[in-house]
Length: 392
Image (cartoon, rainbow, N blue to C red; front, side, top):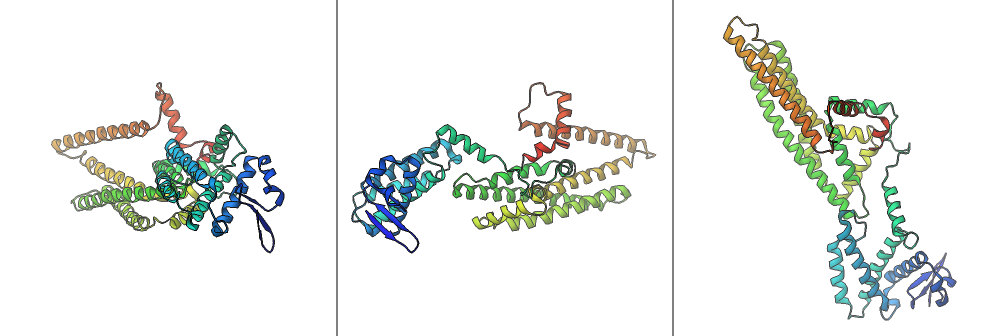
């Protein structure tokens, strides 16, 4: 038994059973068998924390330290194999291998370094078990509690949870003006913000999020540059109607906006891969003036402007083609009608392909007919406020 005195409290340590407490009665030899698992884990955590700070207070490392550390590392390794990225244990598979190899090297030794290392490792194990309410719940109840913790918090204190009347407005903007692109970015943002119990996984998710953004913006930048060059070349064509010129100018402005936002986003995101950058990003995205929906819309602006630029360029080409329909030359009229017919056929084919491919990644029932498709369209345009709130 050992008693460590402080100004405001005293810590009683039992080296025989590897427990510590602020009360003498809790660490007596007769009281060890009467403790429940949760209380015993807390006492062990206090003991290993004491030994981590004062490793020279004992002559030999406790006999159970190596066995407890080896069992804990085996369980952590097994949980990583079973759960994968969803594992919440404090060490990854690679870290478990390194710790076990170091543990094997320290077994024959008797040194202060060995005590310090084992005390640190077992303190982390006990802290993790305490966070998981070790000894208070069955495995089934613990899974249910974890699922409840993953449910989104819809409290009014969250600035991203807005009034129900605002959700249809955001949904209309996202679907009509942004072509539904922000929904994809909203999913990526939420996945990058998920914390699964290990900061290492969160860092990997954040780096993957930044890599995806910079790659997508690079592709948008390339397409916008090519489209801008084609639009400027089209403006140089003589005898272009005023309507075609206006559509081309709109296409130019949209391409320039996509290029400027794409370049700035690539420059700003590609160097922000540190953990501190991710914390600031997450905080500002959730608590900003526009909230997480507005942030997803801002991220999708380069892609949305690129789509509008393509549409405006198509309109300018169509207006230029239609202007020759009323020509006096039969050959010019025939070629104009043929070009217009081919243009409409291509538009219908592209629209059908885009619609089919957009549904390809989600499960659809077998009888997904016209009525179901209309129901799907109106559900995407003006979704219910409750279903939209569940995305936050």
